[in-house]
Length: 319
Image (cartoon, rainbow, N blue to C red):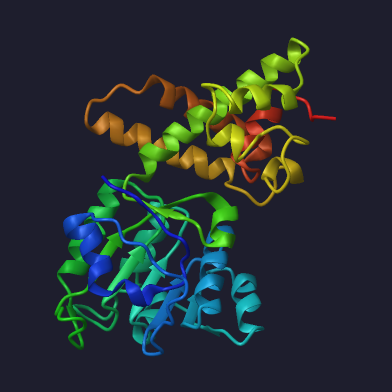
């Protein structure tokens, strides 16, 4: 499955039917230009204002879209309402006032409730206002398929972009909070495969750094070696797990405000479950899941997943 790099979340105006056909038909690459002025008629609903979602919503607001938001966390909604951003009390109310709805939620259960629950986006039945739903949550493929069937069985109140039925895109993201902030997220349709590889690479890099420290090699030295050699990867050159080596990453701020270890454990569980369903052996994924579950059980579930360096391998800060 192809993926594409998005320069920013700003211009949904470029999406329209072409954005839909990218995922559903041709999988051709399409660059979204941040310089495009969005049409004022595009009313965007955003559900899920956590660390990622709040920043994604902010980018849309900065681009000039009329954004309405919802979250179960009233404190999160208050931060938007204090800035004059319209908030709604339920997903159903979001659907009633939006042309495009984006969801960014922590689990499959949350997504199902938001779409098909008593006050969900599809509560009104088979006739909907939104022509496009974009689910950027990381969930299991079975739930995505269920949602696709549910949405495809609906029709639009008004024909949009030559369509009579709404479209839902399975569009999880990669890049973390930093990319959400800067508008450089990667949208993909193979998130659990990406994240299992990310988890294993973070474990490998952390293990290598911790072993190096035990042998008397500084993490700074090892980072230079890794990044100029075959061990180079995102976990070493962009998201270094050793405190004191790289600025602007979670390890530089006590592993706060990053991709939570509990979310990585959840994604690894999705990967192992999906593998079991098709009879695929994935020993590294199973081991990684156990390690991140151990981190959560030790009370580090809300810390960035790179904290595995400190809390599993007992790695030391760079001084």
